[in-house]
Length: 199
Image (cartoon, rainbow, N blue to C red; front, side, top):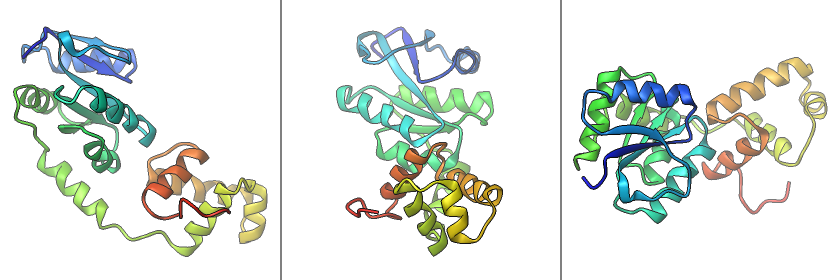
């Protein structure tokens, strides 16, 4: 191990405090919030907090600059697991995991033995086999991508605006995003929408 500190990127002070508490017994030195770009000269590893796909891009940007730095993705949802691993995380854990499990995963990764907890791996495998979106969901996403308003989409599909908001909310949850732009980007990433199509 080269450093005396363990960094946390993209997290609120509350999350940093929680990780500090979870990692208190595994001798990783001080757990500190760090900003990008970071210098890995004094870091043993970095945990990247991600609750949306766009936060997974933080992993990718760190991995590009720091190939040998242990990166652990701390996720709010299993849905983000595969993307985090593809972006360069050596290990993945959930914020909802017990503190001792988080500490064990982080310490193992820093020591050169990355882990993926079995329940998380099984959830990720199940999610990867999920059905493709329905034709209605694809049409909704195409409408969202073209900038169509909720009112216009509701009218076109024969729903009330309130019902359409609920449909979009469920679709955004399924995609693990919070905004229209992120929904379209993630739908393209998953192959649900064509990246070259002009809606």
